[in-house]
Amino acid sequence: MSPVSPASSPSPILELRDVRTHFPISSGFLFKRHVGTVKAVDGVTLALAPGEVLGLVGESGCGKSTLARTIMQLVPTTGGAVILEGKNLTTSNAAEVVGIRRDLQMVFQDPYASLNPRMTVFDTLAEPLLVHDVCSPADSHARVAALMRTVGLAPRFMQKYPHEFSGGQRQRIAIARALALEPKVIIADEPVSALDVSIQAQILNLLAQLVRQMNLSLVFIAHDLSVVKHISDRIAVMYLGKIVELGRAADVIERPRHPYTRALVSAIPTPNPDIERQRQRIVLPGDPPSPLNPPSGCAFHPRCAYAREICKAAVPPLASFEPGRDVACLRTAEISNL
Amino acid sequence: MTSAPPTSPAAVPEPIEPGNSLWHDAWLRLRKNKLATFGLVSLSVIAVACLLGPLLSSYGYEEQNLDLGASAPSAAHWLGTDTLGRDLLVRLLAGGRISLAVGLAATFVALTIGVVYGAVAGFFGGKLDAVMMRSVDIMYSMPFPIFVILLMVLFGRNILLLFVAIGAVEWLTMARIVRGQVMSIKKMEFIEAARSLGLGRRRIIFRHILPNMLGPIIVYTTLTIPGVMLLEAFLSFLGLGVQPPMSSWGVLIKDGAEKMEEFPWLLIFPGTMFSLTLFSLNFLGDGLRDALDVRSSKD
Image 1 (cartoon, rainbow over the protein chains, first blue to last red):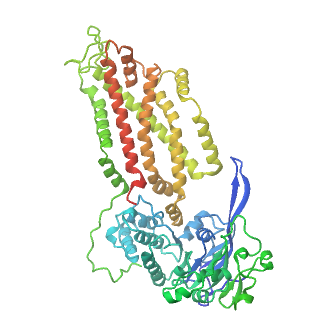
Image 2 (cartoon, each protein chain N blue to C red; image 1 turned 180 degrees about the vertical axis):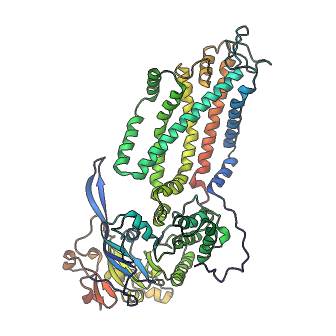
């Protein structure tokens, strides 16, 4: 059940212990009736080392974005602990969270929605600096200019408004805003999925470069393994609110263990057309189940080619299968050579 | 992180390019709209005339000349006089002050109540929101002309009360608009981003939510003023509003309508003035709605 700790560092900078975020569904007028619970995040345990890039993948609706918002304390946690540098965010009061949050910042999915359309780039970037007294108003101009250069934007655009920039440029502004308070950990929630493919690579390279330069830890969320495989040190695969596989990026891509990861890996296109033609795709039958009414036992069993009777009854824990690899599947050992 | 990347040129400070705010873009779009520009200009002219006109005229709005009686427009009285020999132009401009003031003041009352009420309901949501908005629904179903008439009868014919009564009637729609805006904006990613940065609740409301909902508020305000002015005219027409010798456009139209067969100018001039003002306000409101609509911006 213990998560894989990267060998390089024994003390993680960010740790999630059995984090659960459930949303009650109620109906009725004025006097609400509780009709069900969506378990968007249901028992996630993870550790992020300083300077590490963790790729988090899973299909739409599996709880990736909710996990990001839970880490950021933007949605209330139902249970478990989010620990940043030894401080538990879920038990801290609002004022403490504000202080701790400087070390934890987020880049959002849609750069068209994540910037205030009524504020100039300067206002957007200077606001956190001034609110947290990072610098005086007199120094803010130079600080904002430096931030803009860091993300590859010309400072002469600082009086422009978000609508005067392209999607990629806006995402650079959003990254600059996340960097303004010099955080230690950045959560990037699908930062490239709203961008053109040609721009995606630029933003990925920028993030990779910033992580190295500033020794940042990064949780990089995507719904697509081909996007995360280049940037990540480790990859975590999420299915219906739980992590089903966790391991070093190259290992997970080359030797996926969980049947769900196998299907995801088989969907990565290859640039070589000869290999691409021979590529065997594993097409999962059915749709992702509703998190309101998840299947019994292993949540993946209705779509799994390897499922047995036992999979309908028992919930597989995320267990160490080999050094540096955790898999949540009851039949990991049996199917590992298939 | 303060080091410049190698690609940037040497220490030549680049001139900072000015940006175009959404307000600036909206202003340009508004100026292109001919009807809205016409509305803005004619409203300004009417407002200035009503403010300054009575001061410049040699007649007072209650100054009677019973020997003259009702006289047709002439060189001495450009718009003629009413049955008591009072100069119609001065009464029209002085009445405009009252009508415009009622329009602005009542709209201001409606705006204040509506924005605060709607923002509270939208921001806090949940049970509070449900209770507050159901109360609004109930108030919507009350017959408001009767409510205002009741107030007038109970508390006497007081112009100040008229402002408050009309404002208290008109805030319901504003509250609904503001609540909807707040609910949609508070779910947007830039609000989550502001929370992630550790900004305070007050700063988020005033710097991030409010500026993004000003557009619909401005538009609805411009469209509320004519409605309020009509209501004032309606009350004055019934004899429940402004009392003679004070004048308002509603009072003038009522007096004119009584004598329209003998002295048509007493109805034509106030009617024209009132219609022109209402048209201008509506044109301006429509123009503002088109200009401030985010969907029509460059995105």
